[in-house]
Image (tube, rainbow, N blue to C red):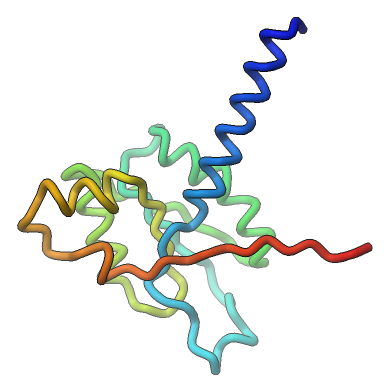
Length: 141
């Protein structure tokens, strides 16, 4: 492997890591209630992807599906809901029960551009979806 190939692989790896860091379960309907916090999650978590299978968003979802499932100790089910520039999937996520079992893998189009372009959207991502932030931790050995 020459230097150019090595740098290219490094950039690809960095790009994937950045995409995962920024896209990893961007939005949840809401967290589990405090009474269920000790048992959460006790059933599979659905990750809504507002684009067709095989695209970039689906690719990212499939990459993080396994890892997040292992971390949570529960299966992550990818549910592709394509159509209307991602609006259909965004609406499905916004209308999901706010129980912490629905995640939405959005992007700049579904979260920022669509609300500006389509003034008649039935939901407002900034108000109807709750952001989820992951804080990676590492146990000392």
